[in-house]
Length: 385
Image 1 (cartoon, rainbow, N blue to C red):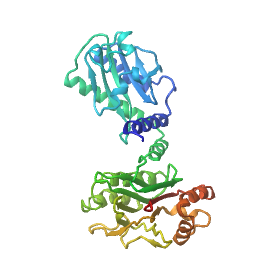
Image 2 (cartoon, helix red, strand yellow):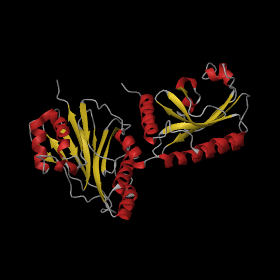
Image 3 (cartoon, helix red, strand yellow):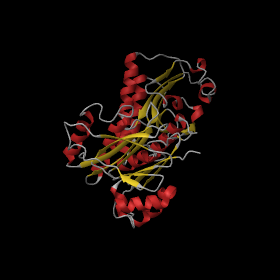
Image 4 (cartoon, rainbow, N blue to C red):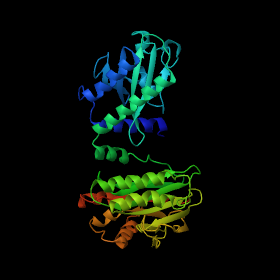
């Protein structure tokens, strides 16, 4: 089973690689930061490090080899990057985490202080740090200064991004796969960096599955940014019933959509794995099917309007049940561009005929519409016995 630590490491590596700056050579915008950091603290060594795979690379440094790298288990920053705030080590020879590192035993490093560097989505990709051969302490004001310098480094890293490319890499890895007791969840997507598709699936604290599919109709990059906004708003409410905070979600998302002249649809369902009980909200999406084990199908939809067009009134919550052998199929309208799937009835027919191979059949059809953004999620409750 994949651990949270493994998932964080994989995500961090993807973000660092998406930055596209590893091995690019010295850059004054980064060197300016490490130079000012070295001078501000009066230390012999300062680093802007990136952590990827099991290696730490010095993207910029003062007093050390530029572009050098070391195994992460031999570098202080591999610990710092796992923290939300600064890490300080007065005397590394007295700290069991670091006393056996080569930098301590062979190079005489005693003092270390570092602040993690985060991307806009919260992924921590590296550190800004300082080192000295003498033990020392940092005051609260000095820690604040180090944190401020780290924020500057984050902004420079942000400018280094191809924002769409990074968003695509991270979004493609988010959310992490989940294991739903008694169920199988398959997701197929060809959504590109400018896609307005919304997709999220995760287990809430009470063990229920929260599955969301939607889309934003907007031009170019705006669609991707708005889709990310919608997904973030839904994720923030993972542990509560969607809409339980009144108009807050509609207001949060609706204002952004209105400002861009866009429309967003959303289908959100909560499923209790033990019982199969489900409750869904359909905000103008309507692209959802309940496939019975007996081969029947039902389109799941309500008369609720898309997000931002139904302010001031509550959303309709519809209850149902996913019986053993039943499937729930959610998708975006890019599916209709695939060969042989012009409408929801055709999708339902293929889903019934293909049975458990439906996701594979959709995957095989993706080349027939290379310019379409297609997202399909299939949740199957396993038969009893």
